[in-house]
Length: 146
Image (tube, rainbow, N blue to C red; front, side, top):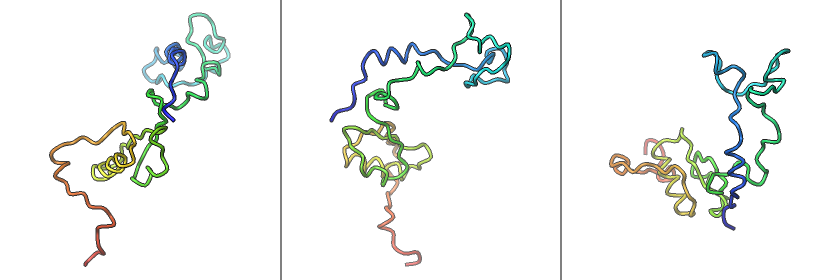
């Protein structure tokens, strides 16, 4: 099975979808544009008057088949450790290494992903210092004090 081909009409739907903003967030610095439903009694936005930004509605939703997909058509999976790669299908899934993961574990995850044939959206940078770091796997480390 190959990645889902996202049709052109779905991409056009996403481009047509307005950017939903909080009422009057453009007017006051203290208000962030993060969406909040307008609830005021005389709110022009709640009444959906012409000239005011649109409200979030179910009709703007992406079709279920194409929800939560990477633009390439693969399902994106966030990975924190090499064990998270088990059970992923390289023809359906693509991985993104979590930002909180350190360099050593990042390299282990990339190595394991390459072995399993998975694509990595944010592969570790190959810096000279990174290549000099000796990768020590937990199973290779003996008991403390030995």
